[in-house]
Image (tube, rainbow, N blue to C red; front, side, top):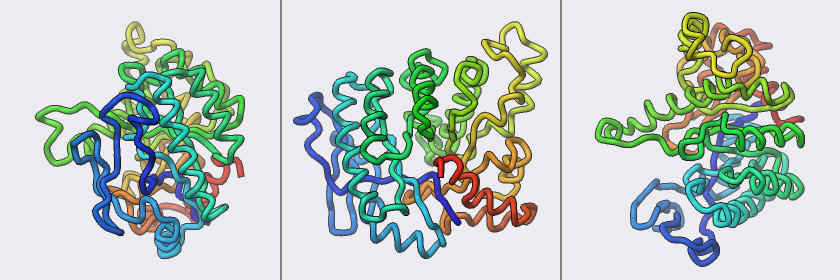
Length: 330
C-alpha cells in the first residue's frame, strides 16, 4: 500500500469570511476559469491552484497514476488564522473543516480528512478537534507555532496532551515563515525558512520538555522530513552535553533520546537525505509524503523511496504505507 500523509486541499469557494466571522483581510478565491483559480489574501495574490486542489476525481486520477492508495488531506496553512481573535478562528475552522469532509466523502477510505483548530485558544482547539473527530475527521494538522509561542507553550502542550488522550494523530506543518529582503527572493522562505521552522519546533518539543510531558502514545509527524533536524541532531547533542547550563532547558535526557518519539514525512527528494532520516530516526518513523498538489511537492509520489537502493523491501513497505497506517490508527 502507498499512503500519502502530506497533501493539502483548497475548496472551490467558501462563504464570505468577513460576513461569517467578522474582521477583514480574509483569504478568498478568485476563480479565473473552470481549471484555474487564485488564492487571494485581501488584494494580494497568494497562490495559483487548479482542480487538483478541490476536485476529488482529479485527485483520484493522480493518485491512481502514482499508485497511491490513500491520501491524508489537510488544510492549506494560509487558512489557520492563528493571528485572529479566537472566536473568529473557531468559525473559520468550522467552515473549512466541514468543507474538507465534503471532499473526503466523495472517496471514502481513499481520502482521509484532517482538521484544523484555533490553536491560539487551547480549550477551543480541543472542542473543535472533538467535534471534528465525531463528524468523521481522523486527525488534525497544526502549524508549528502561534505567533511567538512555539510547541512548548503550556497551552499548546495541553492541546497535545488532549490529542494523546483522544488518540488523534497530529501533523505539524511549518507556516508563517519570517520575511525580509534576504528571504523574499527565489522562494527562500520556502527553501530555507520551512526547514528551519520545522527544525526549531522539534528542538522546542525536546528542550522545552514536551516529550517528557506528553505520553509516548502521542502520534505526531513533522512535515518536510522534519526540516534540518536530522542533519543537526549531533550539534544539538553536543551542545546539550557541553553547554547544559543554557541548552538543556526542561529536557530530562539528551536530544537523541527523543528521536523515536515523533515521525517525519519523506518529502526530501534525495535518497541520501532519506537515508539520513532512516538512520537517525529509524525505519518506523519515516512515512510517505508528497505535499500534493503544490508545485514544490514530489511527483510521482514516492519517487525518492522507490529510488532509495539502500532500503530492503521490508523497509520500503514500511515507508510507503505500513508506518502511515500505524500513524492513522488503522
